[in-house]
Length: 416
Image (cartoon, rainbow, N blue to C red; front, side):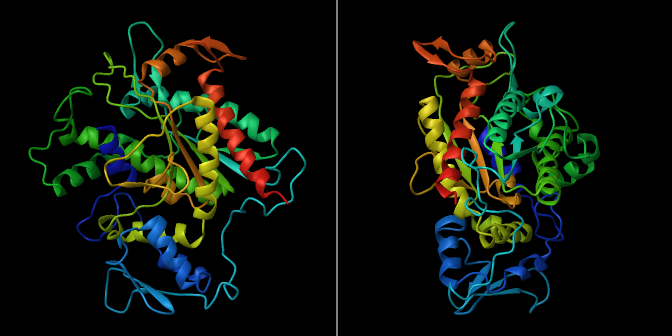
């Protein structure tokens, strides 16, 4: 259920009757692509489509490519399609317009490979009073509840300290337990009902009876909650990243989970794994949505994949070394493993699509595994403790230090 919902609502794959755009998405402004005229060659454009963003020809129903340009389909009258002109050669390509600087573009100070760079930290979800609504909360007996939003918030505090020491200016995408979006579930209930009607749900219920109610997906209340924390919140964070913070890199901090059943009587599992996500692997149905097609092209044209893929690989290697976790494997066909690392997968999520700077999207640990549950109960601590015969840092510091080490290593390798 977790992965199905993440796929549906993180991507925001909902068609409106009047126009093919995602739920809560604005109409795309195709003039956003105009500054990218003649900034990319035909060969590079095709390579990125085929290997990262739309493999297996997923782009062919919405993009037509000729020798000197690409025609991007738009809804509306014939002749309104957007035409992107290719650079005649790499040497003749115009500079890429973007608000972020790539690793190696700033002179750095010895011991501070991130000097001159701004890094945004995006602790996933919300935690606090929203954790149960988000279905990122469970509790066993009198033990401390496990809340993903709170775990990654604490990780972010440690990571901020590490990155600052490495020279970065660190900014937070959200504050503890506080939504970035001004919307609330109640304000989204009319839209939730409209979406249920569009999907042909009948009968439509108003409320639902807890997380185990088998009919909750047919209720206005549950759908409005999903629209709040999985769509509106992420879109608000994207606006903050792109229009206010404008960082050189955003690090999204998450934990994974397996099915746990009733949050009050959860099932702990033996599985524990790790992976990172890079924007890519769009499917034809997703690219049929005008805003998704527009957003994919902005990511492709600003070349964030040049940073995201190798940097994610470096961070994945650091996390794997620190945690000893095996790679997670997708079997749904909605993601594809990246070349060079079994831990890095290309997948189209709302956050890694809308954030226009490079994104490192981390998913280490299974939060309802016995091992992670036990470590959460140990709390945060300095130094190490003996855990199953191994001296380990607190989970929070292990996570933060591994990410910081991976980012530092990559930026240092690109330093001038």
